[in-house]
Length: 90
Length: 90
Length: 90
Length: 90
Image (cartoon, each protein chain N blue to C red):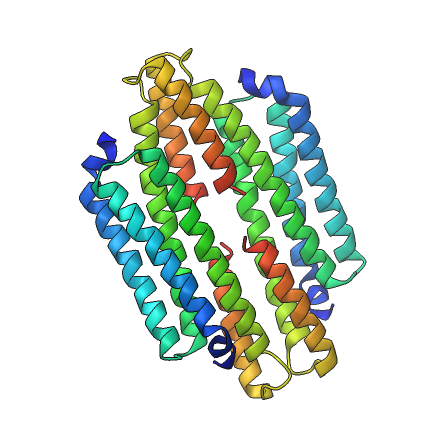
């Protein structure tokens, strides 16, 4: 997981930001704030999750499918990746 | 925001669950756990955000566009909704 | 379906364009062209379908949920719309 | 592009089916059919495009990133793939 280590701080910040967005949605809901604003906040957190997925996936492919990886390991990771993408791209 | 009030507890539980998923991703990343499992967890949290959006949107449309709403209010909400969907459906 | 009539020519052009994109993907596949370019073309046609959906949905909401619609008709359309969005936003 | 050759007939059938769906949407629009049915048809064609993308991507990753590929070629394909996914996963 070297790629994640490399970007670890950056990814942890992204996750903290998304948790902050969700706490803000939670608070807006508890305070019965304007419903349309809640929808906008959920939409923004969806975008942030997509960016997180995209960034972790990018690092994962480079690290686990690259030419430094053993053939056996790569074949296993290719199976995992294609199966994940099938679910994610529904 | 009566519709959200009606489902408030249910929605708050959903949000708490997504925050829990994100804390678990955060921890897996800090502990440098298996990268593929992190991708699966992000994929699951994406699904949970979509379900939250779908549920709040459902309630919003029924509450703010229904026949009990004044024409002026409904026209404003229709503008808001179509604008939000344009962004969300990209 | 007045809203679609209003934009009918524009929407028909969009659909023709997407069909053209698919014919181009079909030809590239028959000619065994570069696989990555085929992926890029499919990605572009996906974007075009989303734009078509967004445009028809926009017109549909304005036309069928607006204040000129009878309460009974609107209630039916709200049921239809929320059910469609649940499927589409998975 | 061996993988696409292997599945060529199956993929061509998928594309023909999506073109058929679009022709049906086109006709429904020309005949000014029920607008909600048109939305359902567009939603179905979106699903079919996702399945096509998923299938071509699956074959692409197996064929172009597998252990039978030269290191130089694989590194290039990894760059292409991660860049495509960034766009597609927005």
